[in-house]
Image 1 (cartoon, rainbow, N blue to C red):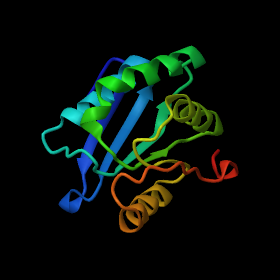
Image 2 (image 1 turned 90 degrees about the horizontal axis):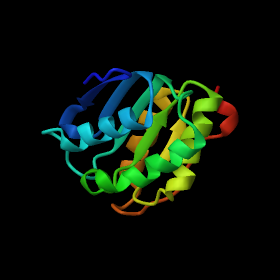
Image 3 (image 1 turned 30 degrees about the vertical axis):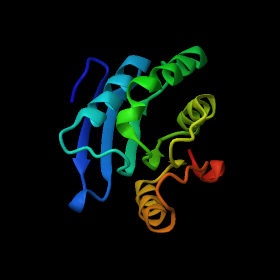
Image 4 (image 1 turned 90 degrees about the vertical axis):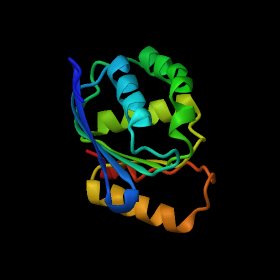
Length: 150
């Protein structure tokens, strides 16, 4: 899917074990909300499906702290469709990791598992392990070592 500021692709893994969202471009609150709604409305989407967001090619530099709060308010429009999905977000810099964590904290992310990574392989491994070890709906706060980001 394309917007004027962000491009993304939604790929469902074998057997719909997890979804990979690969995105690039300049992130804005509007484009991130459109992307989340696009995933939730995808014909193959099932609420609760684990998600790996490969956001290493996104720049979050245009998003301010007040806009992060606005994003948390917009969550109610698409979160019922997303469900209790474990989410692993892969970012490309320490600054982007900080913004993602600020969103996580301000949103009170409790609908599922949420983790930030600097490497795709680590995020995918975490999703696979999470699927094996946690019962549905057992929300938690997880974060990789901040020193590994950047």
